[in-house]
Length: 118
Image (cartoon, rainbow, N blue to C red; front, side, top):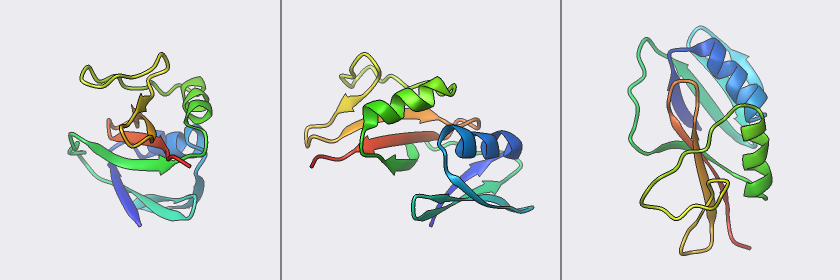
């Protein structure tokens, strides 16, 4: 099970369901719950989100280029980091071969998509 927080539950519900295409399991007074491809993701409803300065939640994808283009097409903006060499789309190739991109949810939580090496 994974957790992130939201002070904007309606926006978070739409983002995780419609942009990331996660399956909505429950919208309770305490959390919006999704099936994140086999992992339960609880987006906790809070008054104020305290943002972590690092990735809060990531998804493994088969094709990071296609997945990144899909979320950008739905309004997400990929993040750029000056200390990383990212391609034109915003994807970084790690020394180990994984390819990663980062973006934020409506509350500002940093999320990632990762394509692992074969």
